[in-house]
Amino acid sequence: MKLIIFAGTPGSGKTSIIKYVIDELRNKFKICFVKFDCLKTADDEYISKKYKVKSIKKLAQDLCPDHFTALEIPKIIKENQDKDIIILETAGLCLRCSPYVKEGLGINVIDVAAGSPERYGPILTQADIVAVSKGDLISQAEREIFRANILKVNSKAKVIEVNGLTGEGALDIAEYIKSSSELGNKKLTLKQPMPSAVCGYCYGNKILDEESSRKRFLAGKEIKNLIPNLNCGKCGFKSCNEFIRAVLDKRAKKEQCPFIKK
Amino acid sequence: MKNYKVNNLKEIKKITIFPGLNKLGQKEKFEKIEINKGEVVAIVGLTGAGKSQLLYDIEKLAQKDTKSKRKVLVNDKIPNRELRFNPEKKLIASLSQGMNFLTDISVKDFLKLHIQARGKKFKIQIIKEIINEANEISGEPISPEMNLLNLSGGQSRALMVADIANISISPIILIDEIENAGIYKEKAIEALIKEGKIVLIVTHDPSLALNATKRLIIKNGGVDKVLETTLKEKGIASYLSWIEDYNLDIREKIRKGERINEVYLFCEPIKSKRES
Image (tube, rainbow over all chains, first blue to last red; front, top):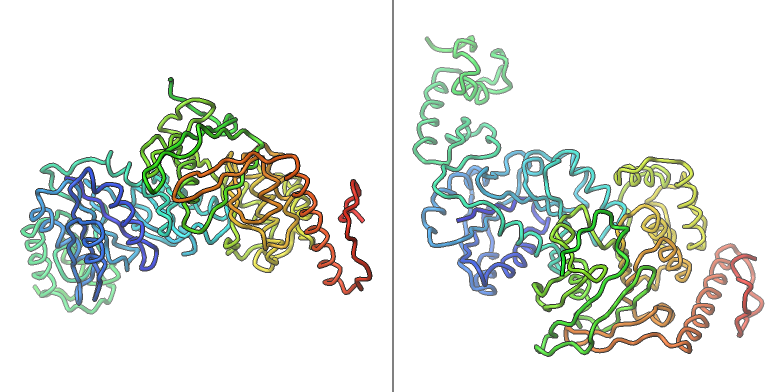
């Protein structure tokens, strides 16, 4: 099984290009399409109807959509063992997280008019493939400059021009998907740990496994109960969550917090 | 047949297209289409006829693995995978009516940025040459200090053409409907051919289509006809293009506040209106 993750800001053209990619692959592979979004989406229904592939909708609602994605990936894989390729589309709100998985293929769809690639975080810098969309709106020169700028922040990326209207680039992406590695029985790991928030992953857990996440969360909660959560910065970290994470990672000592309950 | 490995895109001298199937599943009506360096090929057809698919097949050097089942050879050989899928070796640079400049920067600095992005050494002389060439194509002169965003439609288009001709390494240039741009179209095409590019124009513009070496008529998702341009058509093209250039000259005069007192009905050979 292969896990392909498409990430990109809303409106960058993820769904449009995914449609063409699915169309290229669906005759030879068993595909499951998973659409993550925050509040509402109908893309899953559209894709399953038009391309006759299994589609799942996942709405994050009150959770951070990228944390939610990380929480859901193991379940999705477990429930779809009969599939060859899982194509996952993230809600695409955050440039900081982008839950790419080391063992899978991470594709960032980026709008050519979206501004300087240097401003983007892991969503761009950790991607295996960068699919540049909407190139038909700007000059050839700017497309070439944009591409050079992407390579400055992610020199290993394969930069492909895509067009969600004509399907340009879909064949290339399909080729990369075909030659990407299988997940096998390996434990999946995130390429980039997530920022601090409320679950085990927020406390820096990188193993995609409910049990490890829960353990980490409980360990974090224990420390959290001992500190005043003032985000005062006296420990040397910007926030209490960051501090807790550092303690769990053994990069800091509990005693660095001057207010900690003994 | 050995796979063809291209180290330098400049080595591409010829592409050959072999027929695939149209939307009705019938074989396309041609044996093969050969396009050589320096040639201009017009692609015509109704909206939705299948022009984009043909361009896609050329860009991807299709090997019967795209929807159309067409096959494309480079220099009479099957291109290797590297040439087909390495994004560094992008075959087609494109220019269309809908393209705009979006960067807030001066013309000079912009060209410098592009030259550097291509990994070439920056020389002030190249920038001067590009701007001069753009000024030949556009009616209104561009100066190096002008802001890119303030250029008119015609100036933008002219600069894009000169830039593609001189800085981009792609051997094939696709031009998608630039008829309303307010530029000397013939000059624009000349600038591209001069640099040894293959030029594909998607157009319904009579002077452009009839000035091409040949034109491909697309229908029902396939090439329906291949017409080599006849000598008579070339003559008609040059007359039409004279009228258009003349029209553009009058336009510039109006812009400058001059009075228009006469209309020439016949083109004068040799002497170009623009030089006066």
